[in-house]
Image (cartoon, rainbow, N blue to C red; front, side, top):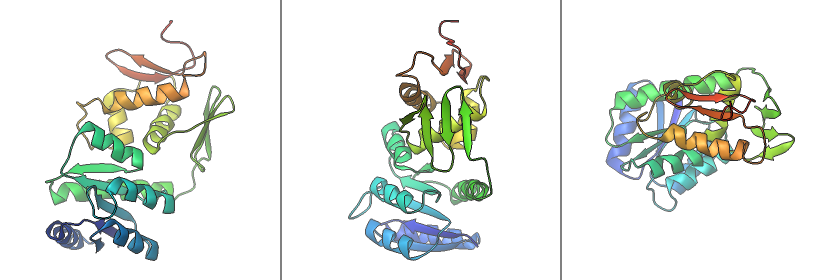
Length: 232
């Protein structure tokens, strides 16, 4: 049975989550503040973490960063009563894998847990070690990126987006496909999330190079291609 750590300071919500997940066959543990959550995480082995953003002693963004430093492959779902784009971006940049706005249906949470646990299991099986396209190199083991020998620092979500594009080069990737494959469609695809991250990635990958790799196809999506599409 998968072990899930819940970090939630509101006791009623924490107890509802624990009971609901236990009824679904998971083993659930609860911490009521960030420091207790980190202590429990250090003392046991967990398959997934669910954390609120507003916590005593340390906020959820700081907690997620610390959890990811201890175990970079652990899936994290963030919970919050806030649902602004900035909050979601900060959560994803901290290393969160998914994001749910309260109130939510426990069945939807369980569906997202299944997706993340399945993805975690897939990453634990032997896989390719490196991807490359043009002068771009992506090390999948160390999660580092180089272009022309120059290291490029990416956030976890930027890295996942780039990996998907490098695995699907020279093909137009619609926003809906990126939402499904990179974000598991767990946010409103009517927002500008994807465009924001494409711009982040373009600024880091293409800014210091004459040949641009990331291009926008108006009305269709985005493409990774070594030709300068904007001039074509």
